[in-house]
Length: 517
Ligand code: XMP
Image 1 (spheres, rainbow, N blue to C red):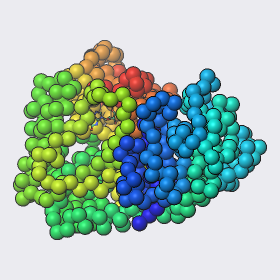
Image 2: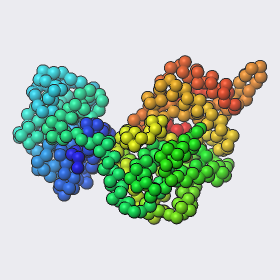
Image 3: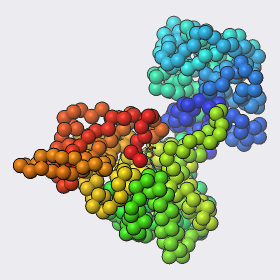
Image 4: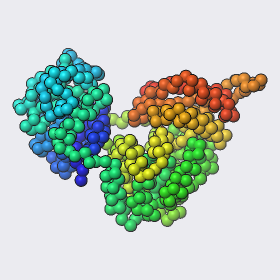
């Protein structure tokens, strides 16, 4: 088994980035909430090292989160980051106090002494940019520790107890605004903890294939294929593991983009030789959507119809023992919530959330341990084409939520599909596709007057959207050059009958959302 690093989460917004950085250095890591880690679970996980994350609480108050004591008696290296440093100090006999000198954002540390965290990266006397976000600070060290770096707001910006291999940093090495952060983390996992860095996608693939074979045995597996990255990678992986025991079902709701349905069939059936049921259910979906314009109602109809069609097709092929799902690690990580209570539903994204419960099949979820970029790397490892593996996310309800405020008809879908494909074509030609998280056209519920040739036109307006993001939770609009936007607008108006005006959406998220509905 590869080396494992355990990250204990105290609720920082950036805890996931710690896991990303550690994995990027070839070491497998998992995030567990502080209140779920016990002495037994620690021993069972057998980490080579433990990292304590940041978090919003203050150790100066009673009853705020603490690291399980067993972390400090396990005999493995421990790195405390921000709140993690503070609680480590408080728990081991040091002192933490509130401070008037808060540091948020960019700050600089002065390296006072050498230590194993800094080897080959920072030397004494160095002055380096880091990213801080703290109010409290350590004011007295626990026995055995020494200060190795300071900053204006944090006299104990980095501390070390090398005999126990305990380290603490007040800054966040996991964010890109600490330019040397990834190397410092690597020093901790590789240098201090001795991890070998052998966790590669090739290794993961082999392990995942073996795990699927063990779980499934001689059973039959069914997998819903949508053409998106996650389900495509799941299908390719499971097929490599168990071949014909897998059947994929592609429920074509008629709300896909141009050429997408054909691509799914040609890649999976023709190239990969996977048993694939392609169910064209567009009539059914469009019939159920007739007259509907409310976004949530559309989502519910599409989700429920999808489940009905999928179940019907599963029955038709004689059922299966397992249902394969493309659940990813961010869906699995239990978040540490300090606010409590249910959060407001902005959009009900989990369109097919009810499927596993209803179908009475066991789940196969081979991507549960992976982040999205790791899924892409695995897809490449499995030989999936680049255009499939690098594809932008596409919502389950498809184009139905990109025709806001209007009934979904074939005519409108066709107009939207053409505009969208011109837009994506120009983005690809300009080499911008991979810099963008998601780009798409929206058909607006408004007709506008134009003049084309010598005549008057009275056609639809469309909006173009393109955003950058790392997880879809927050996003900013993509700053296309004006000549690019001009070129796309003129192509759409010339080539797509039914559209005579094009606008570009410059709303960020929040306050907007990525999709219009
Ligand atoms: P929003 O619009 O909420 O979108 O900013 C965030 C991400 O989620 C996708 N999205 C959906 N995905 N079913 C899905 O599977 C949905 O109903 C849905 N609505 C939005 C959106 O495309 C973006 O990637």
